[in-house]
Image (cartoon, rainbow, N blue to C red):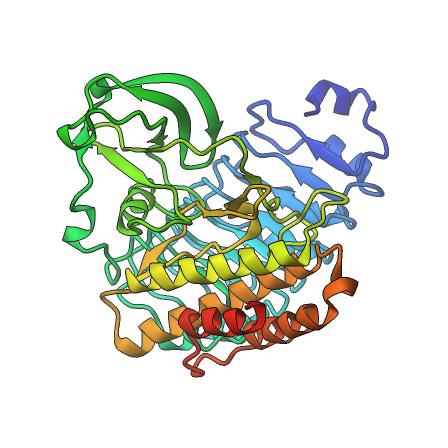
Length: 441
């Protein structure tokens, strides 16, 4: 984090990244002194509502974050930044977006948590667009021109007012990660929480915080007053207390519903109970042993839609095959429950040294059970593409491919067929599970 005082004193000369959060109400003109070096500008968490007309002087700018400000419109001056590829206006007050608002170089566009009612038809002109974040707005429809964004891989349209899921969306050739919960056309059925007892905060004892994400905070916990069905259990617990605000994936309540709807599977964290508090959503679940670790790291600004990994991290081919088979089996289960995971990434997978798998993070999970049959099939095929990208990442970590070259090449062939799968192929995860078993056994 930098300071305005440093900027005005000329102490930030030649920096390529600048981040200032000091309740700014006006754009600091001293930023233009950095035009020859500045590539990343983060003025989030201020009170800005406009940008200067000569903003294009920042000709090297690639990444711009203006989240948590007071913008009501997208400034047209963004068009003057020809190298700008990542734009973030999360949690502003944006209602409308003018035509031709974004430069053709736009690759990652974040408009989460605004009041946007319509998207301009010109959004279809963003041929480089790979990642579009629209959760938490007031959209009632998507422009058909969006179908022209053939490079689009990840789309978040949860927590809007969409009356239906457009058929053309299913036919976008590279779309792999889609979240759409929290719209009138999609809902979790009423009986999905059956069998999971409800408890209150008074029934549990919270201990140290284990982690925090966009949707909630996780604590280690123990029972004070367990429900009858769990009395006598010595299972260690974790509690996730959800935050009330919309996230980049959608509503926390939908994540809770999806976690419960997922049911029981060896590769899912077991849900023990849910909180029944008027002002606090929460889940009680089995505590994950500390022998598990995250398989990957989230995408970077450079990779956009693809995961990153620790330098030097490798996996034996046998572990890769086991992980791939376990994830396929888990997706068979989830699809049987009428759920798309929506965020099938290595960074949402936990593994241990035996390559045992736990698939987590249901923030982008959506229910397709109420959709027409063809759309249900198409959505499952979209997730096959995401699985193909996951396989590609895993194969890139293989440290002993020479010793199992035939198996490596066979899985590589499958990976390519999954990432390029046609929406009408009818390929399911039951098929994938069978294909992998035939190779591994």
